[in-house]
Length: 484
Image 1: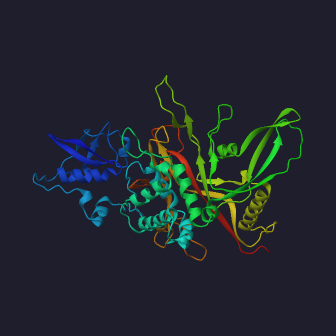
Image 2: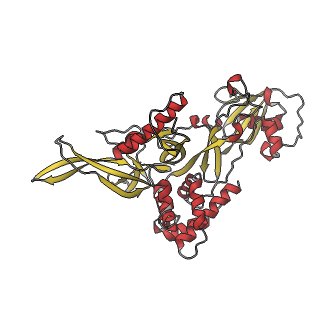
Image 3: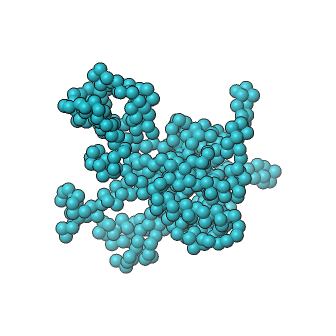
């Protein structure tokens, strides 16, 4: 984001200087060097105090017309010096001047073609699931129905954004989406513009269309899980109730927001609450309360969690408000790693415990006390891969953004970056280090990079990004030999 401010230096005032709030301060100092001849290392900038080089410009409250004071002397100031802005320099010169490696996104953003941020966010949310797109390729180019044309257009979109860092215009995909699902074709009668839509509904339509496209299999294989429902009387009276195995494949795991009497503070608590319900059954002329709890019986490759933040709010003549899907902005924490064993059926839990105990024993030089089949196994842990957030008060307004996890393989250990003996193996070679993790923020066609520690998407305030959809990826362990 760029704004224009004024800079006072000695007796001069430079008007309408462009400053990029998401760039480091050195970028702005380089512009001032072109204007004043004051080298960046000699510049002192004042705005509500001295600005340090590592300051986050977006947090200073700068707006168009703000004034910054520059203190510093130049050696030779040429009044007729041509102004060269750093963003106009070749990439190599810009990198050298900044002394840092410039951020280069590996994929392109998506242009907002009129209240389509919900669609853009959903697609960026799905792009990291390479397994999904690889499987869909087997069904491409099937002629005929609109569903096939729509999915083929998404496959082409996936290729385009991965091979071209320029923003892509998704008009074709949006038109096909609106033709398939009239819900997304609604127009605001006041503005005459297409209406904002719910990202969760859009994601639901897309993954179900992918299932239809592939004869009802692909999305289920990747996101689907099954449950068993177990019931018990609330009054404590023992009664044998056989478990109900539900063969339905669910693709979204719901996380409720809790109630005043049963509050929720984390995603783990919200999921547990969503899997539990109380029902009343009439027996022997008496109403009997039963607690029904669902337990997962098959683990998905990717787990989609839907934070149910929107609830229907009736129109009010008193406050002059229309009926809408209002957002619950309360803070619900979630972790980068999620252990789902606590919501699994006992057979799955026992299997996960055996796998993890086997690996623990091996890593600690102990002969494993349990037998585990050779092969690749899920260990019950899931790592956060992507997040969709919403800014605003209602589902039909505000703004959706997608955040995705990216690993920088260039930060892995090499001979050049080994810093101490702890980084070296016994054979003298560098240890393999984990690549550094970054998060990319996809705000339509604008892409930026963040450290995870610098962002908080858990909620608590409606004017900031609040998570509504989470994508977790299953973690695996490989058992090579179980006869030790």
